[in-house]
Image 1 (cartoon, rainbow, N blue to C red):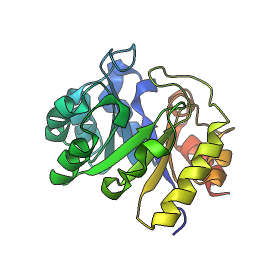
Image 2: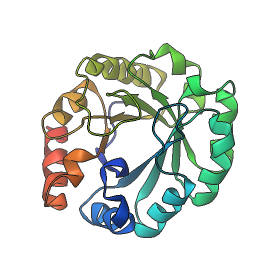
Image 3: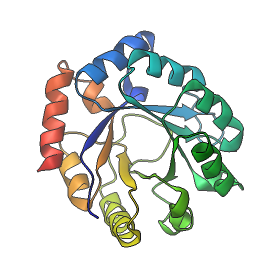
Length: 223
């Protein structure tokens, strides 16, 4: 099946929270097809970040963009109804954070949304193999979850390659997303390993010209 067309997702964890709506709009206007919203509960990861209200704000700030909610929470089945109600188009969760992983995927898809499953650096592909039949996206975290601005763990490119082979073997239209330390110097290697969707935070919001940065990221990803 091979990779799908490149998608650049603006990771709002690196944005200016005081200008959240404007930065969502600016990222979409610069060419980011997706808006990536990390939801943290202070339990699965030490930090607390956005909630469902940020998903709703992202939908309002960029009506034409896909809102991609990444749940870094314990028992995501409890958080899902609010995130679905807020309008998330894609909802990704960590299977090890729940005893009801299949139910979570089914809740998402029953609501007409896309379901994603995430792998932290320590979690192997085997953890999501059985969920692949209900997944529309696999997210490989290339840093430890919960903190923005980390450097990419380059050894994760081997996991990206394994995920790409797995997706191609099963023949389902599953997107392969990477999140963590993705920027001008790392995106090409991740793309070569098989990723097609890139959550970009500090590399985007830390520059002065978002549109130029998105063009450069896309150019490097597309080779």
